[in-house]
Image (tube, rainbow, N blue to C red):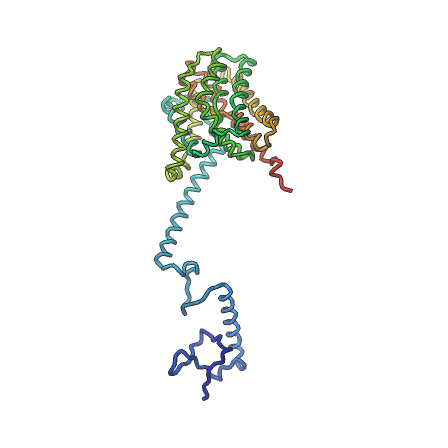
Length: 415
């Protein structure tokens, strides 16, 4: 038998065939009986090996071991323990993320259906007023405080600084917020000749800042969400001064109003929790990320319970003269949405921002009105327009969101 070295051109040896070796294991010895010209199967092996090697060279990969590996290539450079630890960590984070996503989605679903929950609570209050006997005034204050704290957690100190800079759109929205609604409440009270307690409640809710639900409606209506958040923050901070002054001036001829008491209550349930929430978001972000998914539950439950409680305390009076109150509240919010949009367009504000201003002007913080009415007005009927307002502006806002969402602003239309 004649032994020969393989030629340099035949370096693509079959890795599945163990080469013969004699004195020098590093030099493979091939037999002429296994000739590429006389063995078709050998040709197939060589072609497959050449294709495999070319693919590995092209992709920058190289096989260093003879045994096949099921470990992903991305983990080949890591020690086995590190790869296992990374895999375990990824699985743990994925499970916690999926649970968080579930909580967030449930909270969003509750927020989207908040008109349904508030309406159901009010219907239950009219049908069985005793269902809300357990609601005490201290719990009302706690509920609205937690709701405003949750709103503050959505803001940062940079957002608050931007709110006080007052650009054109923000200034227009702020002015319309505290002119269109208070004046509309006053004129509707005069037009419909409302009793003094209902007139005071209507003016009170008209002088309240924008509601937090307006941010959700703005998103659905393809509005300017950033402007919505800043407008809500600006009107909420200004409510410490504007709500007591405007309520005193416009409703003072109907009932006695204590501006100082309104000011202190507004600071307690609005300014302090919003500032605290913004500070927590700035310096305790991990805590905010843990708590924030639960805040929609708190907000929706607070609004539903407070409005139901206000209706339950005056169920008989509402059933006897409720149509007049509902008509007044519907007219108030209709004027707010309409003039908010028309005046914004008159000021040459773009369509998206005009929609945002309309929603912010038309939707009020009705729960704040319920709390202030219960604390500073002797007649419990004063809180009724505020409770009805929470349902009315939610229905209006949902309808507008559905209409405007099907009509994208001109700048968003794609050719």
